[in-house]
Picture 1 (spheres, rainbow, N blue to C red):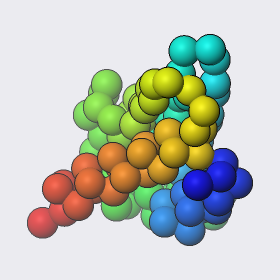
Picture 2 (picture 1 turned 135 degrees about the vertical axis):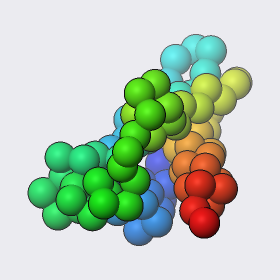
Picture 3 (picture 1 turned 180 degrees about the horizontal axis):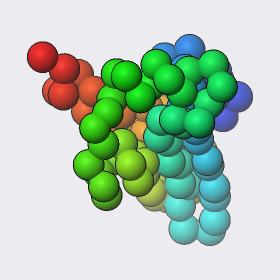
Length: 92
């Protein structure tokens, strides 16, 4: 999946989450987390996800280090999948 497609997936599946993606000669890296300061989604995210345990994935982010490099979109998709699995396991 292209990086642009992965970004659109994140916006659709986890609205209001921040993201960052990087690449080097060793790996593609992606990290996502809720943006509690988002002007549209921040209050909803706080209501749904608080309290946040310091250092947890919801605090520090869902971080993926995919080796070898060459699939930054895939790294972002893995971070999305990790976050969705965490949220599913967390819900009652």
